[in-house]
Length: 334
Length: 240
Image 1: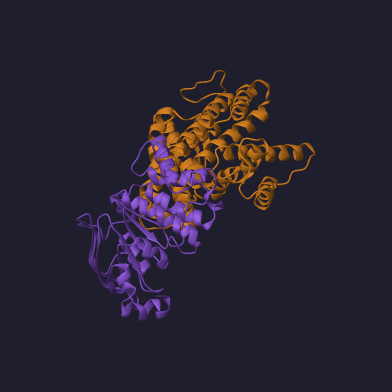
Image 2: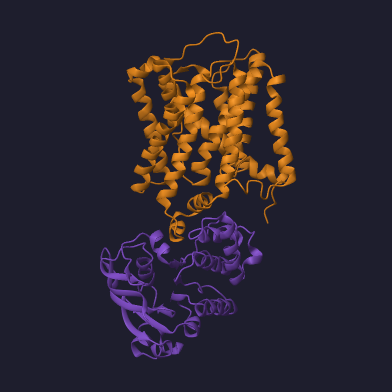
């Protein structure tokens, strides 16, 4: 599966990728605490964006409820830690299947009964909302009053229990985002990847080319939801508090998808560029406003909306397809 | 020659309209069989039943001795029936090569192997030089050949062609005719729906004429076109 990973990759692309990776690896050495938290957010969104892209960008299934998988991952791992002292890496072994099952449930309902397009998207919202309300009343995870992980001043980073300073989370997310990138490229080059693209382009034609579309759509949902739940586990141990109202909220799901849409749906670099641009620039904007002594609630949302409008109007395929032509990484349209 | 495809008494009704009416015919293995008839005669409905898009209301369809009616279209393709669509449906954002690789991957698990097979198919259909283009950028004749290429890449025993010559210039038609003849010589059985009589006369060993969902004539193309019922319902005397 990974044998052809470097096939058709130009020298220039490899150099750029290498530079990006080295830059990101060295960033904590020079970055301030504030900048580091922004970079953590960027990597977090780059990672989830990659996972969401598998469903929408590759297989063409629009999910507007990815907060569900983040929340399930976060709550499962956090609850296991709070109640039984089970560490996050073991908790992951429970959290990932839980989220995968939730994805399989939604996928089965939708694909078995031929719910597609916007109706599928609505179903994903509905299940996420259902979880939000459900967790509000689930006493085991402390309901709407929130689930808190015990915190202390950490002098050293405990990688096994994920107790420590932001820089530890930064490196975990950096590795995760890099692996997700490589994994998605491998998927795209595999048999499954071809079948996904065929389904995205024309499901009826894909079926008549012998593709069991139900099966491959199910695989896409399960991989995407399972991947997303990992980010949820990290979220729980980074923020140390979980409220159903926050983690499962539809605005979280929307935040997840904005990056890949702005960066370029279905491209490998789209989720990364989108995360850098949206999170990076909105945080800069807020910091700049703050420095000027202006505090506008909702400035971030207005900024997101503005970016989205700009991209839709000028670059409907997203930034990456345009950018990659500009920097000579892909051929110009004939 | 034994029958590769056996259609027995199939009917399909859409509300009040009886699109296909107790139709039976055999497609012999290794043959080229044409279905002709005026617009609305039920040709595409017939195709969609064979390809697993519609379920027949009555009757049975057997392929290589096994019942296939009621199977989904992906299963039918896996059994060895490839199809094209009357209104072409390539995967628009994918390259020509990737379109064909998708078909080739049905029976191959290795992408490199599938690509090699796709190249072979593309060469046969004169599309090899255009393999890097996006499918959406192709002209109509090229898109039609791409559809044929994609389904050929699944290694079918029977190829269903739904009006692949429609809208083509005579020289392009002749080119496709010669490609299809070559494929047939190599053992591919072909069932085609066609309006272009020039192609039917040149290709088909046997022709079935549909009218209002029922067969009104069947036989060698040269005989069928002289059949008074066919002239009356479809061709018109001046066409002969």
